[in-house]
Image (cartoon, rainbow, N blue to C red; front, side, top):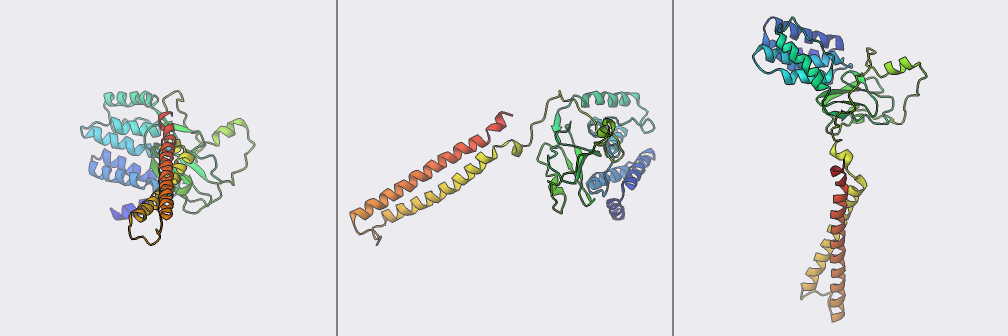
Length: 306
């Protein structure tokens, strides 16, 4: 099995397709353990693919998971639902399952998926000479997809491909997926093409146009970090730090004030000056602490209003 994993991790896209075909053959042969093992490996290693994987191949993993569950008397709907999230046009394989009821359920799921909430793919405005893909399709800023698991892949300017599974409900650091830094400001020059070529330019490596989603569907809230008022949050942190410093200074002054053997206090004037200084620092600490709390609430206010 280790040899299979190593070979699969080095596989090109065509060989990845072959591994899925092998899993399908195992299902036909009713070797469900072997099929499950191959699919589990394919799921783990998909983000390591050195090439951009096709939408249908990515979705096939979950489609076959569902087939296995159905054939073993388990509920396959969640896996089929996930397959359709990645590839809404995924086709039913009547050779694997002849049950018309199951086929009808699968077809009904396509309509259900089109009603799912949508989520931003978080494609940054600036990505340099890199190319960003979701489920095999090149994507652009302000693109959305249906809620669920997706394969995010980036083709770095040097041609290397890196990926990760993502729901896009948490922050996805697209640019940092490339281990070598590059200039995100070095955007490609816009190409002057006919309108059909323009549409196809957003397709995957096979030229297929990226799937559209129903923009009238409910949108999943952006990741918490994106919705925070960051200037207010940073200011709150700074105020809290300075407040703690003044608090420590005030506490030190209080200890000095209460020290009857303090050599720095030789007169009542010294005592009054130390008291005034300590009180001023305590008031400053309290004021900054109050400001920090207020700024903290301001920073999180957007979470309630987005």
